[in-house]
Length: 174
Image 1 (cartoon, rainbow, N blue to C red):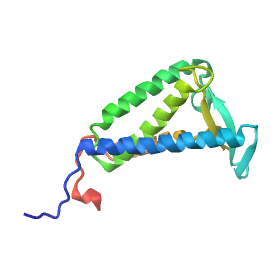
Image 2 (image 1 turned 30 degrees about the vertical axis):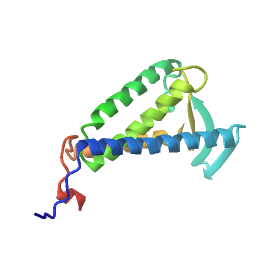
Image 3 (image 1 turned 90 degrees about the vertical axis):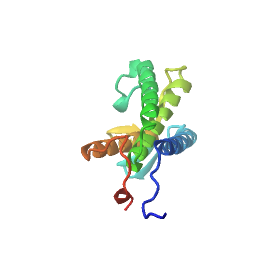
Image 4 (image 1 turned 30 degrees about the horizontal axis):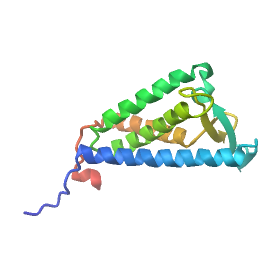
């Protein structure tokens, strides 16, 4: 008995895709940070698009815009909580959109957690390596881009009324 409907993907299968996407984000982020420390470690600034986008190495002890520089350990706890929550929630994912969203968020949160745990100046108080300067607004990294993209996608999915446990329909694939 043949049907034109493709088999539905199980939440478990989507969960593995979340982990793969997160791993890709982690590898790209950490490789780019390694490059930044090697290429920009001597204080060099590399213009990419004039002064609008440039590469400039900084070590950020705080959150976005260096907020809360004296509370690095709190950001470590928040990053760990985010990783645990996203992994827990990702087990329910059953759509491609949510899988991509959660993978980006998990990868960004996990690589920030790794920076907080294992970078100088001390365990659980490490500074995040930032190197992509956006004018004079802020300096970020690849993980920040993944987190931002994941957050925007989450808002779009929420506005569209998507839920974690929705099953993909044949129309979704088209």
